[in-house]
Image (cartoon, rainbow, N blue to C red; front, top):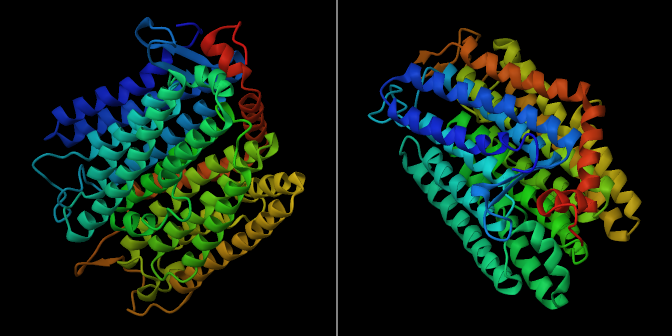
Length: 517
């Protein structure tokens, strides 16, 4: 360990894995599972705050696992970017877990009565948290791949909970696409090692400059392809809208918030650290534009709220890719800010959709209506993050988009201006999509005549309780609070972007003060 708070870094991976084992051992004790899961995530959130402070004030926190040097073993690194991602991912995971607990279920294996012989929801959520954290703190490509595979295993279990034909079919599609992404990534890792003799990111930052440009280009393309599939970048995004909406609300929420963002994070890390010159900026700009436009065109024709949100999820990946492609400090800072915003907003909106299903018995707007009168609380909980997603001032969605547009204008190329225009159009269409949901589900006449007696499901009413309202309201409050602290947060993402563009702080933390470029 070479930095004062480095001892905290491995705990961010070890704690959820230990918690998963304990939760699995307590399979028939639902209360114990809940205590273990929330305690682990609460501890992780506190430790993530410590790491964020340490990374910002003292520099990247580095751990040489097992005492091995970067040339020989695994290195864990937490800089400002990693710390921000860890704290935001832990926050939304806690919110999702709180929502699932509020439903009165320890597992979704059997949704008819909420019981199962082996409740695996809590252990799997903790494994998912460990996988997400692993991707954010990894200092080498293979360990990053390990984090991806942990995510794949956990997400497949979560996606197929309940064992319905629809979920298994969606889970199969998701696994096939994820395996394709993993295969491309693994091949890319093999090629990188063959060309450079290392997979450590800091060492690669030094050695890729000595490779022939054609070799660097091939390695760059292979890594981008693997990450683009994971991030659902067009044209590799068709799988997402068919996979996510089939899962229960908490599962869909955590998927929407986190899984695509690990691909974006990997792009940011490799673009800035390994390929600062051969960036394929024009290709990425076209991909950003098409992802925005195609995704939002799919969203505006959807009647089901989950599918609409899934398409907006794809569309807004394009905004993040736009910031990466611009290749400037301003663009990168705005992209990081937008990633943080989007993780929180998408998770919140999918949880609110779960509330809408409980109130109206469906997420199909053709079967909903008058929800503003039936449940004003749900109306408020939907309206605030929906306006944030659409980029209405003064929310973080607006601030992030303004930063991205400024970066595109500063780039000054005709293609960047085209993408700026596409971003503006996409924002307007996003507003149209969420306004359409509001008009049909909350203001129009209810087609089934439900009048506020509670939601109808399976012939009986299912009341909204504090157990699901509190976690959802908490995440909505976090999104509003993020707007209040947007200035300091934007300053933090700018400092993170500066360090990423310089590369030297990362290299010196991992390799020592004598590390040269």
